[in-house]
Length: 470
Image (cartoon, rainbow, N blue to C red; front, side, top):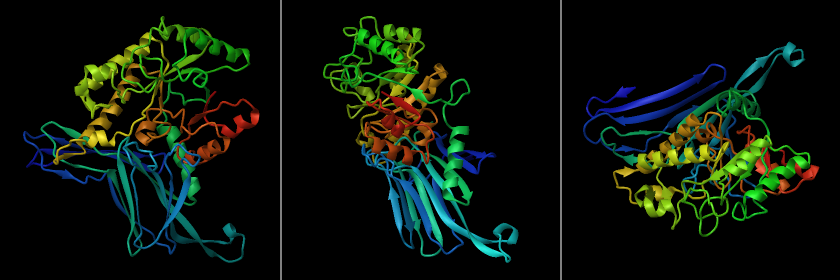
């Protein structure tokens, strides 16, 4: 911690060095402890590091596409970085995995080492090339950016952080940077990916009762009833009963979008009350029925996107950004949301909270920000989003969260520490695409799911994720 004696600005670094993995992480916090506004804080970088190679081979960047809701979502890419070359990455609209992917592996050749006859199986010692590298990951469920710049010599400069910061802090106000994780390795870059996966399992995946999540079967009837728009208590019970009759034991019954009051279909979000015209006894009648069969429940929510004619839109316009986005950086809005969703989870006996996010928030974050407050709305929003999930998990310690954002648009590391991606991409049903998604995403995330409407063995084997929805 460092405090500037002139302004009262405090910089706090929270870092973790892992003794069981070659991994270090940190987050920086800036707080105004003075009585007046701080000077402008601009271009804050959570990471600014120069790597040097000792061998003659160039730096190689292993990176991935983000999600486009296409067959090539999460496609692995390899780029050799020659002298003077620069690569820049940033999502287009504020959701961290939109088009880009904030997980990187930088590989380079290290110093050759000598191996003797006993190692090489030959009569004379010889030199072998030795690879090394670093995994670089940015955890920020917002508008991040990362730049990889090769100089004219043997160096590579990496800078990353929230894309836009040009702001003053008011007295008592605090912001934070994205989480940065570095994992170093020597040897094969693919082995480093497996070390990363083990680190994810050991220190990151959310657990219930201290146990890692198991493979799950999570069926739903979305394709039969227009999500939940044409669903009712009886047809939901019918589906819950039919799976065991066919020899399938669901872990969860999944009720997706549309169970709430709406006037124009499931996208009409903003009134988070069970539609009692379609479900006179609430969702509780369905979840109780499922529980009696040994089946838990998943229910879909999308609290951030607000549409006209709904309760939030009409009653609390002051909580909305640009009239469409519930501002999780507003303490009053977040407190109401936390209490309201907590009550729904409790009253309706919902076991797993699924949160969607079908809106690019960037324009709403940046709309009408003052010249000296650029980036502040996003920063408070992101910290509010994480605080909201942390509080839900505190109140419901045995509840998992499913992260959805038009599929996989918000599966950054901060989110993946709190949730699991049951639907990794909205591009589903295609076995080739699902094989591609499994291959690309599994370099970094050891647990993810998808959906299928086929039941034959070939199709199911080709999908083969951690969770499967029929």
